[in-house]
Length: 333
Length: 102
Image (cartoon, rainbow over all chains, first blue to last red; front, side, top):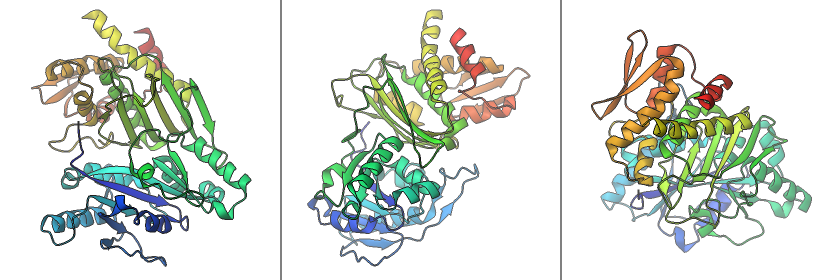
């Protein structure tokens, strides 16, 4: 399955004052971002000197299901369709990427749902990396008091540390550890200490610059800032039956989607020499991608779960029981 | 793509899109029958049965003759819970034990 002809849309999120616009300003100087359209929710104090900047007013249309993450962001729908139409009519310079800078309180779920669920948009755009800025000085406060902050970190593919120049090394180290506990699947970049690395932030390489997940058979990390939110990485020795895995995950998300903040991993699938990349945020699952090669020599499935109030041992037993269903079916055939 | 809300017209659900991605050598019909067989392993614990419906949807039936047509695996679970009038929880200890015994 290829979606290369779709324009990638990066979501840039992070709590109030965490340096989203400063990062965007730096990123837009990169040649890789030369043809990027930018959608922002509010014009802040930092001006963006860029050809294609458009303001959107946050508006969420809740669907009949009542599920918050599965709601269409009407503002984004209108803005992306408008950009598309104007690009097709050559009314604006050609763009090959869109960046959406959210408000500090935005839940990334509805944005991803709009990109994957809105019929016109999903045929022209695809989600790129979710990039979340984390202000090291105030991270503790944000993560302990704001559920949106936790969702923004959980949804991240790339986490950007900001204001480390204003923090003590001990503070920075503690936040690094905390983020690795909350979302071990996201790559980390220090915006204050390192030059802008657009390739790292924009390339959708799974598990780039993450701590090694492979040694942990069933590793569980509990965050001191969000007691009920935990992450764990699960390693499966044997290839899985894709259909059994899909039945299990769809049932898990149907019943517990609100508490499964993130599922991200590479799955070794029966009948396939290379892995399938899976990526889900709450109820929303990206179309699975068949990777061209394994990222490392370890060819086992590795899946990271970020969950709230879910017993990890039971989740693993459940997955293994569902994966064994295939053997039972074939033995009867 | 949304496990809760089901699919959109004309778009394959991610569970089915994944089949194209993995290319396990099964035909589309074989894959649908395989999906039905696996889902029935779970559904039988709740007195429900799934069947293929004209190669384009699935027919879910309860023991008392109630039926529902669903377009994908994602749409299946809310309907199964509606017909059974109880949650179907993959983390329920009794379900896990039943599947482990099965």
